[in-house]
Length: 334
Picture (tube, rainbow, N blue to C red):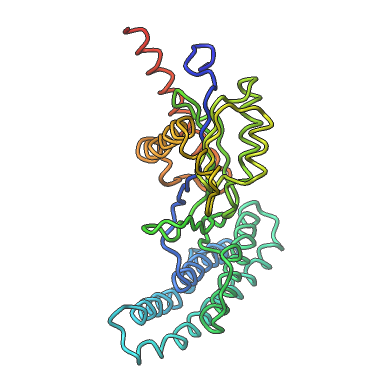
């Protein structure tokens, strides 16, 4: 539609990445363990009611209250004003919380086995819910034991930060005001006219540079030509990406190198074409800000991998339609 209305011709391409947060609370070992106790106790209550045919009883209520009390005490030991005695109490509190969580897992697994023996649709749904949640809670227990009791450093890729949005990744982008973000990394391609032509929701926290060849290939499929101007920040620079852009005969390439530059490289950086293209690159930062403030890309409200894809896709579709309509309206008024 944008091409037919001459909103864009695909002559310029700029690429950047951002993070779309998931709707989770700040993850700590204690709160994740409490989430496990709470969710599994709730499932066991529903399972017991389904198996006995009676009213739902408050199974595990005492365990939930005890877990909440332990979480509050653990948080108090981590406070700035906590004393040395309070901090020494921390491992013991965690051991008690881990015991409560493990008890909840065992109880849920017993309920799941009983549910699996029944053929009713409702009981099968409950059994499926327990099968999906119990392994996640067990993973939380394992990482808490490694981190808190054994003092190990658990890699970000091995950490579970939410029972409800298990696909959430820990993303570190080197920003001082956001040392760690919890969500999904999204790659965006933008052309002149303010249109986002491609987005990709990435898994984990991969580097940006491998996405540049995919962006160029997609641009060629959409516009049947390579862009005359290609620009991105230094995270996208590799020798392979630079050579690919040169082999495609892109007229203006603004991919700043990392590290010290030779005299020739400094001359390239100072030339007017490079500086003009790199100034245009800065516009994608504003585009991302608009997408976050006006089109919901600050935080995803849907659930799961598919929900993240839909949320980002609908936001970008709405943004592109607005850009097209504004361009057409401006031309008509002129």
